[in-house]
Image 1 (cartoon, rainbow, N blue to C red):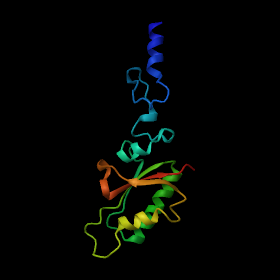
Image 2 (spheres, helix red, strand yellow):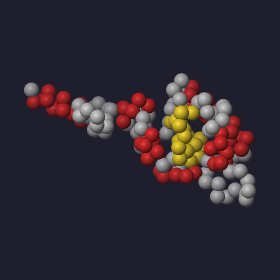
Image 3 (cartoon, rainbow, N blue to C red):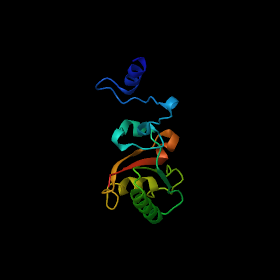
Image 4 (spheres, rainbow, N blue to C red):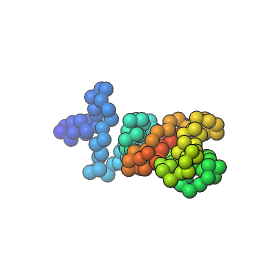
Length: 146
C-alpha cells in the first residue's frame, strides 16, 4: 500500500497548479513533455519561451547576408522546419551595430518580414531570444501547427 501511495503522490498535482518539473529518472522514465530538447507545444508557455527555457529545434544564422539572401534563406529554413514538424526556430540576425548609417539593418528587415506574406501565415509568435541564445541579436519563431 505504501508504494502505491508514493506512486500516486509523485504523479499528481493540486488543481490549478502548473505542471511539475519532477523527473522519474530513478525508474528510467523520461518526462518528454518538459525535456528542454524535446519541444512540447501542448505545454507551451510564452513566458517560458521568452526566458529561453526551450531549446530551438533549428537555427538559422543570417549574419553577413544581403537582405535578399537572408529573406530567401529564412523562407527555405521555415519551409524545411515545417516539413520536419519543428515548432521552434532560432533566427540570428545580429544587432546591426556595424551597419552603414541610415541603412536598413537585417534586424529591422526581419521584424518587418514577420508581419508580411510569405512568413505571417506560417508564424504563430515571434519574440526576442533569451540571453543564452543570442539576446537582442536573435529571435525565437514559433511556427503554427500544420
